[in-house]
Length: 541
Ligand code: ACM
Image (cartoon, rainbow, N blue to C red; front, side, top):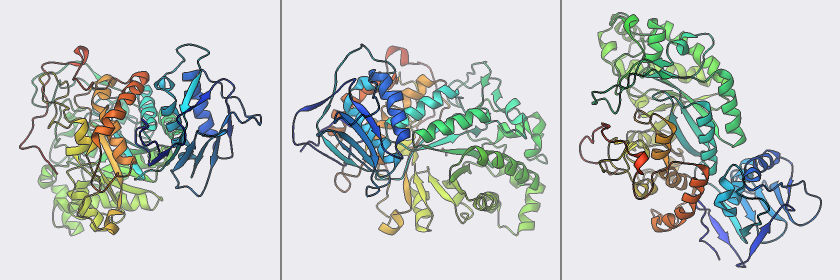
């Protein structure tokens, strides 16, 4: 029995009858049975490029790797057998085969994560092993905020590869916010002409007195989005787009001032926001706004095949609606009690609109305030409470409580920590995150679709900062989302740390600028940046 392979996330079961190793060389063929051709393409393009192994078409000899689908396995599960020839990866679906191929790559060598071989003619080998594995959760998500700092397309594709290497399968693409609109909408060109650029950026968090005085921006064309979605699909990742409404919308209002509360402020004077925090300039709850965003979502549905479409719904201050005669008239006309119900009405409109088109609305947990729309799925970010309430009401939820899986939170209290946001959340804290709250019954817990790590980028101006904050903690998160608990309530952090030694070598080969266990390297430090303060005692829940 071998349960000590260095695979991350930890597989459900590994066994081995022999200590020997299986050799792999230029002669080792690849046989892709029906439905697995995409995985074979991926193996040749990545592992093939890294190792120089040609993986020729199989010609009947035993020295080969056979990819096949076994419908008897769990849909995303796989069996990987390397202790007999031919070697086999069997999956419950193409996704399962893909995850088996990811484990194959990890077992091969950290060098299998490079883009080209270090030398030619090298012999490769694998432990002789049988791995049987399947995920605990169907939603294993990463949210990337490309609105606060734009990540050019190449960086997004790279993150999809990094997700795939960790068996993550939902990419929540935070495309719009007060500080930038990042997706081309053909019928509203000003969203990107005006909304995708800001004149300058606050250096550090909102309390900082410094701006960088450099324009910042960028956006994805619709063809860029199609490419990203297709690249993700080849890696069995669903891209869930987020258009954040009715708050976090200043970039849209700067582009189309009629979307704002024109009877409260002069929205013509607004520009794309150059500060951080919660912004008061929210959308006006008018028919014009609804029609406008229907137009946005129409184009979005054409680009994103995902069943789930995220509409934000978080942090929408109600001050302008309180002051706005038009918003108050709308509340009266609809017979609503208050501004919270007005927000529910707004979200409910898009819930029905999306449902009528075969999609499901997802929103941050504020969408619970004022009543939850019928089919809505909740992203529980302000702790577990929203998720618990929603699951008890029969709604599906994605658990992403900030105190555990907000990867913008600082990793250490040291002076030279470059992203000093909120409280310290270490690798071990993330590893010990449990997505299913103990308060839920078994039936309620079935509404927990899974978990998601969120990367907000106010203080991450480039991909090196994003790498630093995201890794190694995303590896710990991946294990939370994929691997069943070894025993109820238990995870073995010492064993995870032991396996991380091999995983750091993989991240090095991938060129990931993770935070080293010993703290930031000299070039990763950034003295003087003001972070979001630690308000109050650290949350423990
Ligand atoms: C959020 O962090 N405002 C969802």
